[in-house]
Length: 499
Image 1 (cartoon, rainbow, N blue to C red):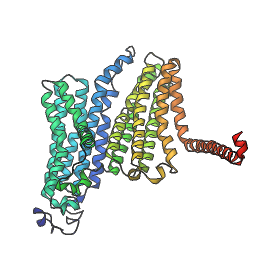
Image 2 (cartoon, rainbow, N blue to C red; image 1 turned 135 degrees about the horizontal axis):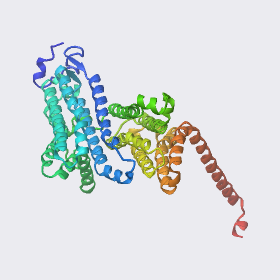
Image 3 (tube, one colour; image 1 turned 180 degrees about the vertical axis):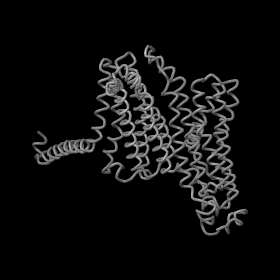
Image 4 (cartoon, rainbow, N blue to C red; image 1 turned 180 degrees about the horizontal axis):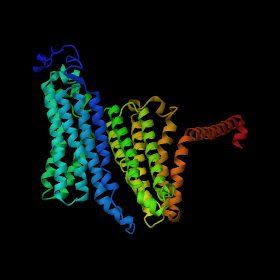
């Protein structure tokens, strides 16, 4: 099994594919490492919401003022750091599209990378709590730089041992081109973070701008290239290496399977965070139960009733949004770059659901903060679901490449998927405006929304079927009427027509 090693020091020999060592020796398949990394990255991206969700708001303090403060500081920083973690995940996906096999050194390097990624929530807490202090930004940026450097070391190590690389890259004559391109993808984020760390000591706003560019710069660059192509036209001569098969691996959209795994991790951690809050904040003290409730645990738990209702409602919302996401990607055969971007935005708002739970549980009883808490929950739910709907609309523009035939225009599942994806945006937006117009009934409106939506999902297929039958009946009646009128006109004599 060690025979291929001597050949790996030179250029890859055009031998049979898979000239590396067999998994189980000094090299192994990377499937478990990727699954572990996806799970850990999704956990870290999601727990970023904890410093925001656990922000204490005084009962006497107006939520409107607090929400403004949160939006300007903690929520904005949360969204930025969530997106940066997804950039690290995307770079990890690209990296292991090039490297197919791992050995002990690569596994340990990946663990070092994951260790620093697990430290990011602490640095984010510093940033969120002290946004005007440079040390938190410096710590976060430094961790991001070191993560990028470790990933770059993994690239260099992989190309130094080509038997670990993708089979197509092993037989390529342009391995240096592959290496340069993947390093460019991995290091552009750490370069911006390095500049952000420097600027943090004398111009903090510029640091936040640079950290934002870590996520948005590639998309801005592609938009500029697209506009230039539309105005000037495509290049007549392509670069010699552009026809290489690396474009299949490095320029194509991310793996749909890994996108689903990362998304499932985010949904699972959000659901877990909800029950952790219940366990932490809703267990009565034994002394209080004895003195205040005369050893009656049931009486003590009654005080936490609204909190439990808020938990179950939040879990149902999280579960149904995952169900919609699952149904959506069940019909998607290929995810484009823009669909991946929309999925990231949706997950960022999914990560905000623990904040919605905290607000609705804290202000469950009637107070001046109740309306604002409900509206914040509706906004988070709306954006989490509208980005899912946007993924569907984007897929329809390229339905031949991206959608299962059943879900395309005219397919048997098209109308049902449209209704399923439109349900939460419509309901949450309707609840938001109703609470604005009928503020006295805001709690009742919110609870009705939470009760109706699950039953609407259960009856959705029946409702869609009935609606389609009614629409078809109306259309057929109108067609018959038009046919009858045409026949009557043809049956009229010329004299009758003239008269």
